[in-house]
Image (cartoon, rainbow, N blue to C red; front, top):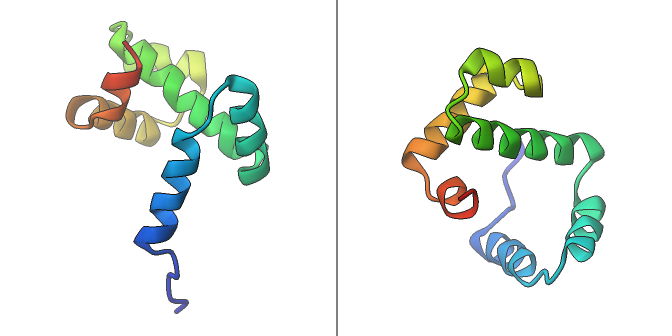
Length: 91
């Protein structure tokens, strides 16, 4: 089994860099370098699903509109209920 070498300092560095982004173009550039197109699309899909949940759409409507999996949609829903991020940024 491979040992996970990611540590708290690495994670703090990642979040500090993300927090320092000043505009959408810089954000696109950084995420374009760090992530695959598919990873970025999946994150965008989760944001869209969270917005639709906030609007009161049903799971079936959200799946139809976003093509998100029911398992991922469930995780987004749980994060909306118990997390802090979606609530703060998707007003």
